Image (tube, rainbow, N blue to C red; front, side):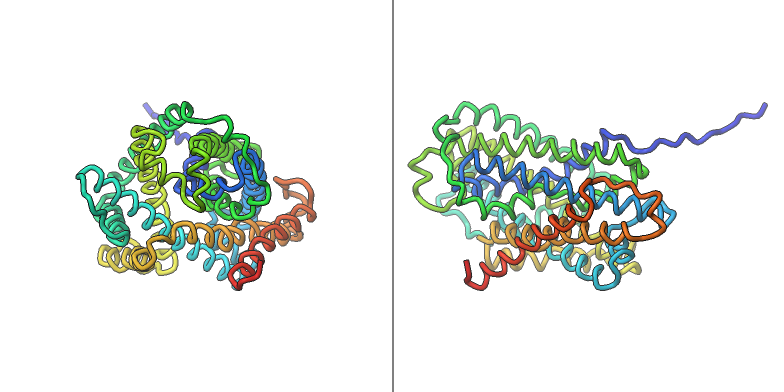
Length: 413
C-alpha cells in the first residue's frame, strides 16, 4: 500500500507578525519618554506621539512596499534590508544605510549599557544597604559583562527562553505599574501644558516607535500578502502607541508640581527612589531593567548578523565569537564608562540621524525609484496613498529634523 506524503505549507500568521512588530517596538525607548515629555505636559505630548506614530507607520508601509516589489523583481522570498537598499539606490545608498544602521545600533547600545548599569548599581546598593553607591562607570561595565557574558556563553535555545522570560517580566511589571501608578495620578498634572517645549521630544519618540528593522522579516513571513502586511504593521505599531500613551499619562500624572519645578531631570529616577511610594519604585526598577535587557539582546543580535553578513567567512566559526562580541560590546561599553550620563544624548542622536535616514529618507527614496521601474508598472500595489507628494513630505520632515540637530550642535537655535 502506497502512502502519499504531503508537505503542508503554512505562511506566517497576521497575529504572529503583529506580535513581532509590537515586541520589537516596546523597548528601552519607553524609559526616556517621561523625561522629554515632562516639559510640555500630557496633552501636547499625546498629540505629538500620535503624529510621530503616523509618520513611522507611513514609512514602515513604504518600506514594506519596497520589500514586496524587491521580492517580485528578485524572484525570491527573502531580501535583506541592506541588500535591498543596494539594489534600489546603488553602492552609495547602501553605504549610507549601512553607516546609519551601525550608528543606530552602537548609539542605542551605549544608552542601554549606561542606563541599565545605573539601575543595576542602584538596585544592588538598596538591597545590600550600601551607604556609598559605586561610581556610574562600574554599573556600565557590570551590566555589559553580565548580559553580554550571558549572550556570549549561552546557547541559542537558552537565550530564546531567557528573552521570553524577560518579556513576560516586562509585561507583568508594566501592568502592575499602570495599576499602582493609576492611583497616584493627580488630575491637575494631566492638564498642565506647554506646547512650545515639544521640539526636544521628537527624536526620542522616533526611537521609541521604531520597528523598521523587522519589516523585511514580516514581509517574508507573510509572503508579500499586501492586506496582511498592512494589518500587521498598523495594529502591531498601534499596540505600543497605546502603551506609551498610558505610560506617559501615568508617569507625568504621578509627579508632584513642586518636584517638577526643580529643573531638568528624569522623572523615573524620582519614582524609582520611592517618590510616589516604595512599591511603585520597586516595580519601576524591575520594569526598567528588564525592558533594557530585552532591547540590549535584540540590538546585540542585530550587530551580530550585520558583522556576519559583512564577513561571511566568520559565520559559524567558534573561534570568531570572541573577536565579534568584542567588536560589538567593547566600543559602546568604553564610551558609556567614560560618559555614564550619555543615555538621553545617545537616544537623541540615534533618533535624529539614524532613524531619520533609515526610517524616513531611505524608504521614501526607494519607493520613488521603484515606482519608476517599467517592470513594476502593472504589478505595483502602493501601500500608502498620495503618490510623490507623500514621499516629498516624508523626506522633508526627516531632513528638517537632521538640519535642526546639526544647527543645535553648532550652537545655533
